[in-house]
Length: 389
Image 1 (cartoon, rainbow, N blue to C red):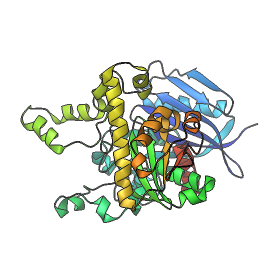
Image 2: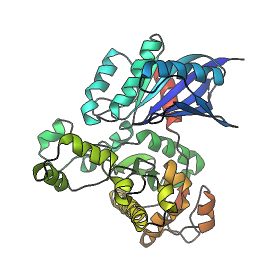
Image 3: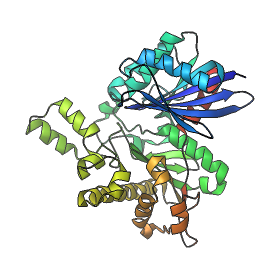
């Protein structure tokens, strides 16, 4: 028996993740699929409630159109979907142009394309998927959900750089990212623990890309990423906050090109650059090398410093939520971050932390501590339903 479905595409710089939903009386997630675009042959990892399977696709990742065509066909067949009602997409940058999710049409596509200079490595990925779906199924409604929209509630003290005012008029300001993840966590926390959600909460989205966000009653007031996805805390291969003088030195004194700087900042820095071993915290945690230990120490200290700084913006700290691949699954990282914040009153329940329970704070903790799984595809799908009717 088949039913109608909706896909939520979450395009990363080197991967595609898809949430597959059945549309009936309510939106029901039936599976999650992912493709790592760096590997050949192309393997589709399909996860349902009961199983995880690897399916080898015949099409190569270098040609996106036939790959997407095969992907849609395989997913509809495997998940028992007779047809698609629509497709939602994650788009990293909405700039000053978008205040909410939007239907995809010629006007909105042109606006999204105009923002490529603000996110040159991420914006094209979502666009390529939209354009591939338009070529395959021109009649199929599509929507775009933006990572930056959630942070538009922040005031000018956090949005503005200390640059001449005309630069902000040109779009050079703090935008913030991971907004779809933070929107999900704000709603999930409100359902799970309304009193917790109503307070001053730092959410730490820790994954290969990592940032923190300060929520006051579920509304974004501060975040660590700013104009680009390079800012904030160190990440897998990105450096986080960096003195702009370093870049001037490399450009002026060492003769580096803009392309070489881009490669350094996006692909060779962060945990990989510090450790010289790996960008994956799992590898670093199992390594005995001092460089691996130092990379983790820099990462957890920077995360704690950022949390304390965001608490200043919020006027206090009532809770911390860990999410993302690292935040949800690595108790050692959570413990190290909380250990740096004991002066703020964090006290961890070691057993609850090791077991990854929802609440991991000890009774003596003045700050509530929690672990929550995020789900960006759920937000994309819900926004697609709202936009597409």
